[in-house]
Amino acid sequence: MATAADTAYVKPSSFAPALDQTISVEVAFNDYCCEPRYALRTETFTVIEPDGTRGKPDRVEIFADMTVLEHRMTTPGTTRITTGERLGRKGEYVLLDGTYHLVNSRDAEPIHVPDGTPILSSQTATVTDAYVTVGAQDWGALRTKVGCLSIEPALHPSSVRVGSPFIARVMMDGDPVANQTVSVFGEMDRLYESGRKLISTDKDGLLTVSFENPGLHVIMVRLQAPAPVGAETDIRSYTTALTLTVAPN
Image (cartoon, rainbow, N blue to C red; front, side, top):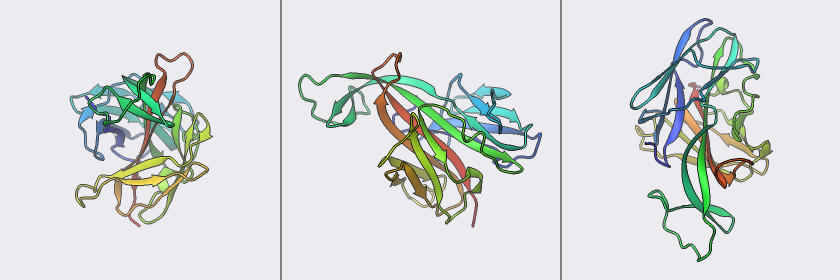
């Protein structure tokens, strides 16, 4: 079972496939990028075509440590492969001084909870995306809404290179999330014994990050917020991530 620290990733066999090529996509949880540890199981896997049309992967196979999707790329442009918004395990939080704290869990940090503090029920909501481009880049799939918490690229994910800034905006229900901590980690971090890079969005919800190494990277944001009307819990613990490949400069 994935822990609170684990992050889901979406790893296509190619980020620039040919037209009519069938790609495989590895989807899993781990605290590292991008090594499978636990399979991500969901009915919400979605393929968003360049025009924004939503469909399902051609094939889904679940293994012990990963889920593998297969899909034939039949349309030129940029396609989004996403977990969709996956609702997961439930837990309990308290709200202290404007910050949510996990309680009654092995993953909870020791804190003092004043008597009478309401215990809030919570459920995880996970979205993880990757973008693959056949031929010329476009933006239709990037502009399609998936989930409440989103990472919206301002620079096309298929254009990311070492040393050049990647810019995106963190949004919650359509509003920018200011001063939000964002984690960035790559597949070469363990080789160089480097940890996650933490950056913060600005007052307009924009994040800017430059990559030192080529290869796969994950950008991840996590926050708690009141659950939508009609939800089974008081709040949702949102985690949204974007897997991208960084080209050499």
